[in-house]
Length: 401
Image (cartoon, rainbow, N blue to C red; front, side, top):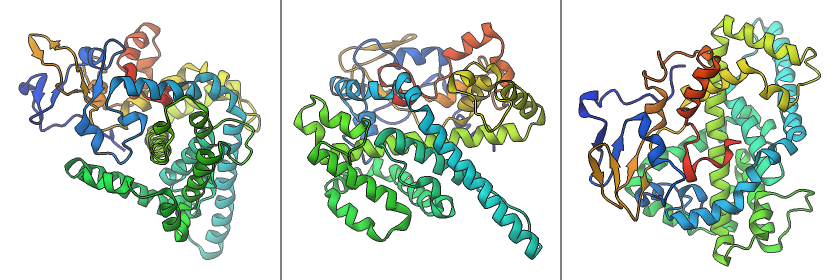
């Protein structure tokens, strides 16, 4: 499994660090400038053209205007705090244990059948399995239920295929954004009815039912804790911010952004570690020191203190580059300067994380999975600045914690 998304080799370095990639937009390839574009300072809108390609126009991630985004993010951000994650630790562990139980159960059943029929042993479709787990965790964390994703038949192969096809449509939607406008005009009750016969989408159908229940009745089946829906419904947001399409778009954002990127990263980390016995052995030894009994899992706080595990995760985040394209920013009220170039107000400017993560001046041998580069404290401090899988600034990913 090579690097998922590397810099485009068709763009020669002789083209310079700043190029116009279409009549409206600039792209800059200079790692030191990343924090200038993706920053907490000043007003930064998003490009309307970029945002229009997604079918979730009311979601926080594709909100064009700076002030509207700030209002929307302000409501959701506390829900994704480190404190909230820690409070969910036991529930997340339960889902992981349920996932492991299913893997062991299927392994026993398949090995029994293989012995009887003289066939090969069990092969876990690892990417599909990880996707089921991440979906279950994201669903439970955000919406209060796992909606049965860990137990999806054939590890959710049909769901994964349908979801991938939906993501691929994004490229066409950028050219024909009216498709998304038509889709967003469909009432939720119609979508629920359409999903009635789709077994792989049962969880999504049930989620949409719960969404309608919260939006209309301000409750979600008497759950003992808040969900994203109840937080939105009980907030002081204007009425248009608790509309049917807003709830639906937020759901789409959290499910896709939370599960797809996590699946890519975990899949990559596992692949790289398993193909290097030295890395695998060292990682196992470090984890065993705090978790000598596999039946007594270490706490999240204990795992966070493990330097080699942290290094493997950082290197996996660097190489996965789960967000392939630039998310251009627009300074609406001022010019921006890059070296001697003035970038007029209103000009979309984008940079890609893959350019930063593959910068040989910062990450020597960038295509190599090398946790050792993160082990030196002084070196790690420098590298952390250029590890940007969650972006930076006012628009950085809600799920960074």
